[in-house]
Image (cartoon, rainbow, N blue to C red):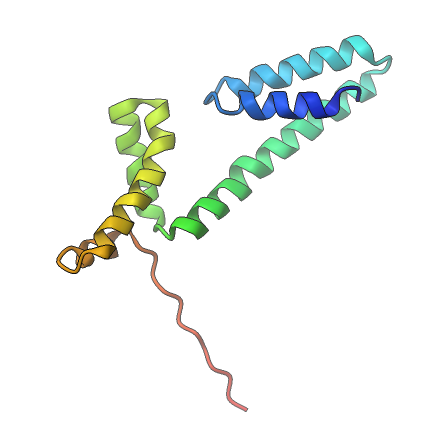
Length: 132
């Protein structure tokens, strides 16, 4: 595809707009491919590639990176998304997960409030020792 780097950056910027940014970007890239390429196979391959990258990004990479770095349990992530949606709408759903991580770090730094940080934390995995 011509101008692939431009469209990659363009899609990355549009992904900052929740819910509508990615479909709008995909539509623009698909229209550009339809206009500039002769075969419908190219259009199909671009749409499938964009869809596959989006599925992997949203369902694998984002939860893996956020959950691994913040070490917040899944229930608190769920509660953060719900309260964020109630208070600030879609942008709150996105912003409340890192805010929960910030609250967890602040609570864990204080000795008097460290027991509240346990509510946000994942359970530590027990290491098993293999016997010979």
